Image 1 (tube, rainbow, N blue to C red):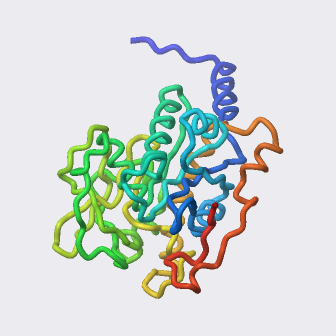
Image 2 (cartoon, rainbow, N blue to C red):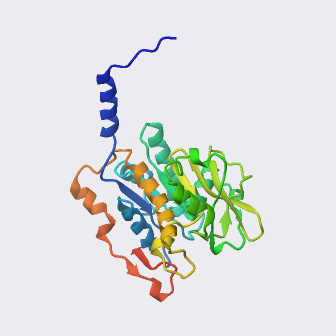
Image 3 (tube, helix red, strand yellow):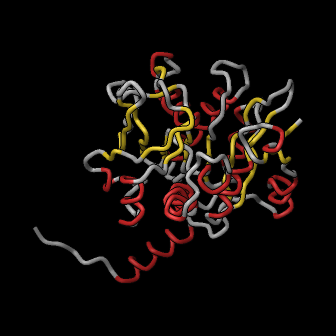
Length: 302
């Protein structure tokens, strides 16, 4: 078989076109969730800080929007975080329904050739699993003894071929695999034997207090979910959270991955004024840690 060398000009054009579809100004949307009082919602500040530390800005994604509202917004941002929390599973216009709309729109963009990453954290991980399984409740099972538990990851064979871990340094992988650096705060989990209707690849597992395995990280193309909370290592100051140097470096990898993946699309706001009006800079976090909340700071929306 004869191979034809592509003209140099063609190769240069392909590279230029690829670069043109990227951005150096990534913006990540973080989904809000039902608040602690009626008609409010919130975003924990630790997610905002984690995204900003990895080189992106943040736009809050509010609840109870229409599908057209979310389509319009997602076409102007570069990726999404589905954060952890304790939102009810079945609330009209709530966290899980909105996450399902975001996931559907992200897949729509992916089919159109736009790389649009999602990182699901703890509750966000559970949302990705549920949504991928048409919200079948049996997707999740109770996970005993996984509140305030720090664990190393038990990586599955081939995890280095994944997008999530493929570019991680050996030092970060060693830290994740050998040290208690992943903060687990969850009542629910996905068992490895659970059949999901979409092609998620299990990248790591852990065991709960009963010795039963649960999935701790997984990916499906540009979508990734982690059952633990990387952002807590640097930004939530409970004494149980690992805050030593290697823990923080390993934790940052997950948001670095998200922001790097988000740079691979050129979604953007049409004007700087519209961009400015959407940024979370328009809101101020409240110091909630001192009054007993799990989060040191929260953005609370009325």
